[in-house]
Image (cartoon, rainbow, N blue to C red):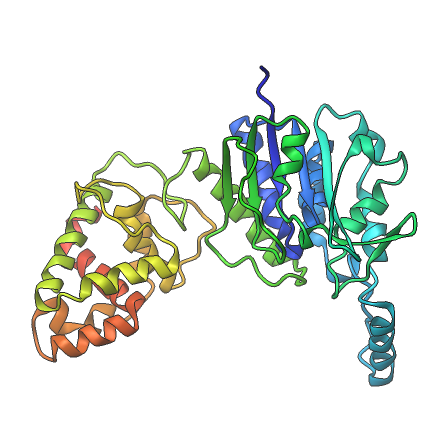
Length: 395
């Protein structure tokens, strides 16, 4: 039996720029899909993947603004805005004709039909909310544009698209991650890219092995088409995909492999510092675990506290995130630690002297503050841990 990889692209409006970074990384690691399915913006991005035009997709996203997608007035005159809003209400949503023009400019239907990569999309019948799945072979020649616009009509914000007398709205209303369609098309393996869009996200019901890509970071508002944010999202998608394929480590940051023992040394030192604090206030274990859970980091430790895994280095990542260390560039864990240490003037550890040093204040009171602000406590504990490891650790 042939192994047919399927790339499944969820909808999510302007967050779709993330998926272009995924394409770039998949090319780099040599993961080639035989099937691409998409919903809403995923159907647009999927077309670029099928056409093998990743450079063009990146160029579009870096220059795209809302006027390339939606009919929105440039004027700020009250009377013109009032007339525009009345038209939106009467028409049942914003007009997406500009999206159709963008599709005309960038999507080559004939190139897609001759591509070795098969293509499918999902849209939703407006009156019944029934999901409609279409492969490119099932879409009448010359009408792909209409079907892509229907898949992207995010009602009620956007106007429904009519095809052969039937009104359709965004495929996300019924199936935002079209894994079932990929299975129907013959996929034997799934890679799904979720961008936290609005819609119905079904679990993998296909029985096929699959992997899921989802950003740890906020990819921005649904309709905020901005080149700078798109560039950031593309970078995050690229790094997250490298992590999925084992090229980098970490959870939120792209941690490069290193030959030193810094990861193991940090994990052991942090665990020891946490145990010391828990002797002064046992509830600290709960606060520390809560911080990890809330922020989406691994919550359990290994039996070997020095094991340099994602769970062992997660506190440093969490602390770096809290101090707004940018995630767009890969770095070793030691480099992340140095960047974190350079992100503040006064050590966060100073806020918990009784818990972390056994000096002054009330350990009980500080434990209560840690329970209310667990991320702040973890950040303080990381700062204390790194200070305790000494400067020789970094050089």
